Amino acid sequence: MPCSRSSKGFTPRGLRGRSIWDTIRWMTTETLAPPTVAPFVLAGRTFRSRLILGTGKYSDHRVMKAAFEAAETEMVTVAVRRVDLSSRGEGSVRDVLEAGNYLILPNTAGCYTADDAVRTARLARELGGWEWVKLEVIGDPKTLFPDTEELLKATKTLIAEGFIVLPYTNDDPIVARKLQDLGVPAVMPLAAPIGSGLGIRNPANLQILIEQAAVPVIVDAGVGTASDAAIAMELGADAILMNTAVAEAQDPVRMARAMKLAVEAGWLAAGAGRIPRKLYASASSPLTGLIG
Picture 1 (cartoon, rainbow, N blue to C red):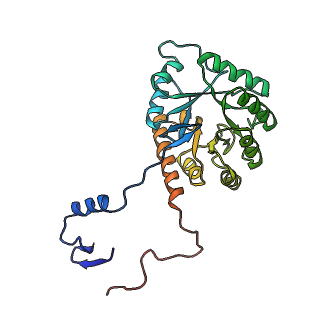
Picture 2: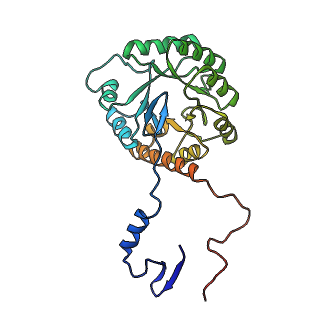
Picture 3: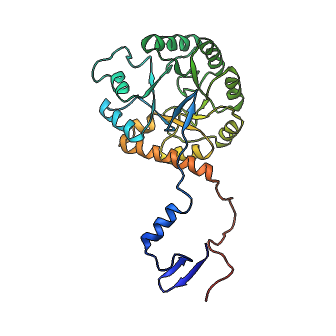
């Protein structure tokens, strides 16, 4: 809307004489409504949050619970081989998660072969009836990079047995396509090695993977701080899974909140469409019609 100059500054035409509160109400009710983050649909289930958190490395369950609440997450991962999910007493991990009505996503962390990963997923189903599984098949104990050959093998077996498989993989678009062809509802490429906090090391590969994927892409592993999460979402990721970045922060609850806001900001920015990068400056105000 064109603006007119007055002794009180610039005011949109038609709003001169109105109070600042009238102007704010006009801007919020008579123009475009503030956008909100769209729900995230995965395997037929709708989530309001696009941030998934892990349960490991927290100093205690009280801090973990507070971090989940600050992040407003709805899905959390649990390492079946490292956490006793059979324990259901007050204060147990399972008790905390079920009380919060989170979708529990068992993961096969610590498995180095397809057979081990399949057995671990089956154990999770026996313990709690969980058919969703974050599938990890690690190929190297130092880098914790996935063994994609074993990952594909385990994925095929588990899908045939009715599991909803969310595979942790590298940032290779070809492997992601093969997983997609097997029937996974999403692929979960790493941004950097697990727990490294290095952020996105290969944005070009990740962007290609996202552009070519026909299923949701959940960036998993390597996020260190809120700006990493925002960048991942700006690249086009559908959601982010993280653990160490929150659990080992000096203030996990504050970091959890920061990650929630960063994921939302990144998603909104991706949909807004950034301005082109330019080598030289471009004036923020029009250069024509100058007054005075």
